[in-house]
Length: 264
Image (cartoon, rainbow, N blue to C red; front, side, top):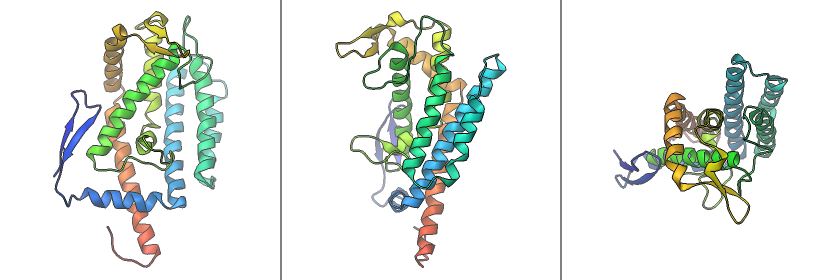
């Protein structure tokens, strides 16, 4: 059994104490085996993007019940999702994910009341206060997912997001279906209820925006509250369970396919 040390808020895994022959070694071997296979990586990428689009559809329907007009959003997202099972490569799946995200963010912009503005998603640097708030929320979410994966003994690299030094790519995969319920809806509620205002953000020399330190604690409190209300911890745990089961089954498929009968 491993002992994991988390930060007080549970957002970072500070370290693990485990036996030298820990059973999680098998998890990492399976991961390497499965994600080294293009077909299995493609399967996982499709699963991740399907989860993300499902989250967008669920959120859109929720706003629809509150009187928001959706236009063709649901039809367009469903059409994008329907292409996933036949997508030949992870690259094509990433293109479908990008198209779905563009649809979602166009809808998202219409949910924000004045004086908030959101022309488009921008990251480095965030071009406006809404983008700065989104990036902050995604960072908190990514840290929490990375901590949970490290505590499980997983290698933090992925299938939809390819390996890149310094980036926890597998964490990026896991949070895809959580971005809308755990961050985007939080931003809409925070802006709509005037919990924060554009005046709480400052523009830096490079042109990007960031939240002022005096408002940071308030933003974190609101995000933690939203995290609990959205039951995001449970959703994240389910996705990590989906990941481990996917890796276990696909690893078995690869072994049996080569005539080996050893299940690592």
